[in-house]
Image 1 (cartoon, rainbow, N blue to C red):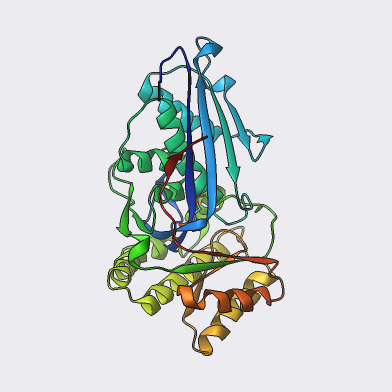
Image 2 (image 1 turned 90 degrees about the horizontal axis):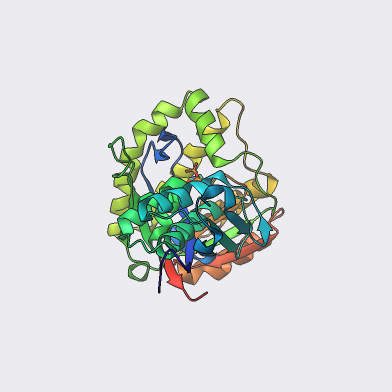
Length: 337
Ligand code: 2P0
């Protein structure tokens, strides 16, 4: 790619969403967006964001953020976070050109399907490539994290761990792979109970939990043990252990949310019905476990050979509108526009 400040410098990247098995909730630094706890996720093949960034040097000197445009699913959208990532890239690359960003999700946006994870991972890669920056995966992960914590994980495919780190500058709060997707295939059946966007953002919700839930200190204190146990379950490929730990982390997260003031209730009736379906399937001998993020969708974790039966049962559950089955996906990558 020919990149000069006299030209339109463009790159397109695709990144996949991810689902945390051990959850992130709460920050140790809000300005630098550094998580208070580590997390472990799987990257999902079926949910992706494709983002094109064009730095337009012909727009003249002093363009910068005021002239940036961010088109999300075809709609011109205000996002200080997107502008923040573009500014970080411009600063590192020594650019002043404004950018046009076009981003498209192939799944519902802002409804607990982690569109900010795939979105900021794709933005980090597309914007840095368009600016001519050569970042390694760890640097890309840190850049994506500045946009959204969970996005740091979507830089990688398969099973991924995000470290909370200890440094004040957050440069040790990056994600890294734990196991390749092909080394241990897994299916995630997403039961979609609504397409509506959530009313309380994760950023806002987790700040409230940190400030008001009496469970928050216990959440932070127990994180390290959960991470160690999950890492062991993944490296030994112990699916029941992975599932039990994931369900426990999910329930602990929602206990934290429910005990925040005001309480955060991300579930709807379909969410609860789907949780019971998963538990009922388990009683019939299918190894399947649920996890739920800051939204009403239920994600069922199972072996690929059980995915059709799990999807069938979830689709028949009252309040479930649609299911999507995903295998594990790859990390963020550049694509042809
Ligand atoms: C996670 N979630 O680990 C947890 C579980 C939601 C519930 O990461 O403020 O959108 O942008 O860093 O990454 C959602 O939080 O929050 C999230 P910010 P983000 O996947």
